[in-house]
Length: 409
Image 1 (tube, helix red, strand yellow):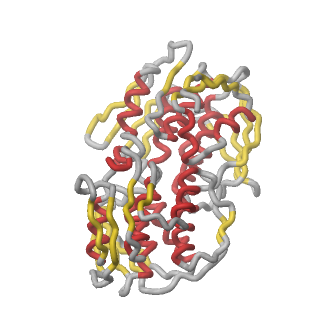
Image 2: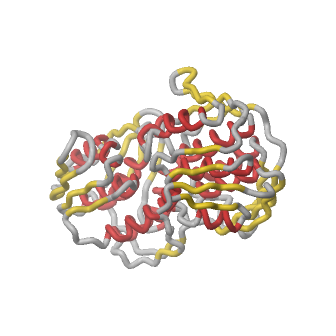
Image 3: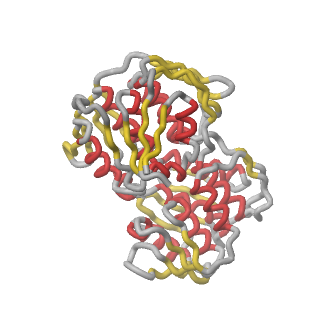
C-alpha cells in the first residue's frame, strides 16, 4: 500500500457522472436484522465498504474471538447481537477501537440480562460475552447525546427480548435520523415500534424475512458536493441518491446551497451545478455529524466563516475528529476554535502554499474531506487506503473525473 498519494486537477473543470457506493449505515442494519429474522432475506446493493464486508463475514463466523477491526457499528451492533442470542464470544478490535467507549451499551445490555465482562480497561473493548439470562428489565434509560449506535444496537435486538423494550432517551438526541433509519428498517422486516416523545417502545415479536435494497450513500455524495463548490466549472451527476432518504446525511443538499452548489433531483439521482456561495454559515450538525469534516474543509478553502454546534460525538470516532481538524486546518492557514462550550468556529485564512499535505489519522473521512482541495493546489494525502472503510472506489472515481493521481512509496 502506498504511504501517500498526490492529487492534482489540470483544468479545474468537472463534467462527470459517478455511481455512488451503497450506504454502509443501511447495509449494516439490514445485515443484523436479516440475520435475526432467520438469514434468508435477499439483500440487494449491499455496500462494498470494508465495514459491511467485515460484518457479513463475522456474522457467519464460528470463531470464539471476533475482531471488529476499526468498525464502530460492527463493534456495537455485534455486542448487542451476540449478547441477546446467547453466543459466547470475545469481541475485540484495533488499538483505536479498544480506546472507544462502550460502557453505556454494556451497562444497558447487562440490565436486560446479558453477561458481559471487560477483558481490559473498564468501559472499553475487548469484551467477553457469555449467556443471556433474559430476566432483566424491559424499561431502560440511556443517554442519547453520545452515540446513536448504542441506541440502534438496542433497538434491533428489542423484538427478541422476552417482554420487548421501552427505551427512554435522556438528554439531547444526537444523530436522530440514524435512529429513525433503524426503526424504518426494523418495520420493513415486520417489527412494530413506536417513537413518542423521548421513549421508543418495541414489543416482543418476530422479524419476518423480507428483501431489502440498500440506498446509495449520501455521506459519499458530500465529497462530490465539495468538489463542485471548488471547481472552476462543474456539472456533476451522482447516480443513486434519493430525495426522501433514510439517511441524515441527505442534509448535505441543503447545507451546500449555502456553500455554492445547487441540487436538482432526478429519477436517477442528483445533478450538481456550481453557484455563488455565502460568506458565513451557522449549522447544527447534531443530526449529521459525519458531514462536519467535509463542511469544515470546504468552508476554510472557500473563505467562509463557519460556526458549528452538535459535534459532541466527533471525539469518539475513528480518531478525535475535532483535534484532527484543528491540526490540519493550521497547515492551510485556517483555525478552528471552541469559542464557547460546544460551539466551534472556523476562521478561514488564505492558502499561500503551493501544495498542501494532509494526514488522515486512520480516518477515511479525513482523507475524503480534504481531497477536493486539490482543485485549488496539489494535495498530498497520507495513508490513502483508509477510504476502503466506506468508499473503496474513491480514488478511481476521482481519476474518472479528471484528477491526476500519483502514488508515492
